[in-house]
Image (tube, rainbow, N blue to C red):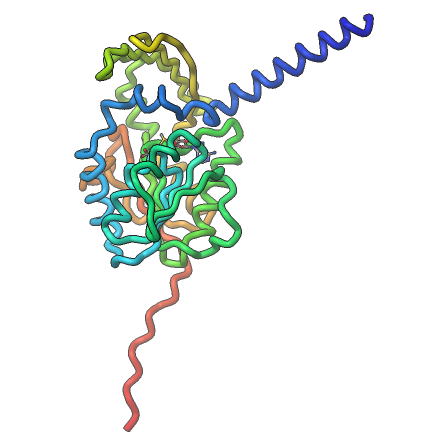
Amino acid sequence: MNRSARSARATSNETSTTRRASRAEWWRSYFDDVYLREYEPLFTLERDRREVARLLDILGLPSGARVLDVPCGQGRHAHLLAEAGFLVDGVDLSPQLLARARARGTGPTLHYHERDMRRLPRSWNRRFNAVLNLFTSFGFFADPGDDRRVVAEFARVLRPGGVLIWHGGDRDGVMARFLDRDWWQTSDGTLHAQERSFDPLSGILTIESRWSGPDGSGEREHRIRLYTPTRLAELCAEAGLIVEAAYDGWRDRSLTRRSSEMLLVARKEGARRELPARKSRR
Ligand SMILES: C[S@@+](CC[C@H](N)C(=O)[O-])C[C@H]1O[C@@H](n2cnc3c(N)ncnc32)[C@H](O)[C@@H]1O
């Protein structure tokens, strides 16, 4: 093989490696303006307020408690939680979504950070009363070990006795009523369509999205590893987080085998017991 053929082959190998890497790491670029438009019907202030009200009920924390929303996306829960009186940090990897979150407002009780959820700051050991992982923000990584690592990071930054609230798709329920395609129109007249397939061995749901509208058309694919509540509770337990309640999504009722969404409440072990107040000695 001559020099130029060798170099062309090396370049083509690099391109296909890059393509493979970017396919596996779809989550680096997927959460952009197209994502915001695709899921626009779900992003209403009314819905965000309802969800935050439910979080406040479950958490029962005093104002001034520290809450981490990771990943926080465009800040729809983080902002309202700060308004409710908590000290809130939001972590996300998407510059576009973080820009939206920051544009809505920041302040001494609300900070956003552009970071990978697999590596939270070292200085955040035992910092938070609550960690929130909401709206199926889990199971993105090609290596399931990375999902384990994320849970370990959540556990590390929680105070003993603090809680993780995990909300997202429930593999059992999604499978019970699996729909392999759907389409809808967004307010600007764009038509969005999804085709979904599921691999039971890896647990990976593949979603192919297509759109067409006044701003153009396109297609792309993303993949999420769906978890059963059983497996997720095991992952939590490995990290020292004990699931103490499992709800049917945002509803105040128990998870069932048909729930397509679940909300798990897992508490970090090792809270120091409150000592009874000492009797004063005369
Ligand atoms: C489905 S959205 C949910 C966001 C938010 N919890 C909500 O309820 O709107 C998932 C989020 O995960 C973020 N993300 C994806 N990979 C990430 C990573 N490795 N580290 C941090 N955030 C990540 C995306 O940028 C996106 O904002």
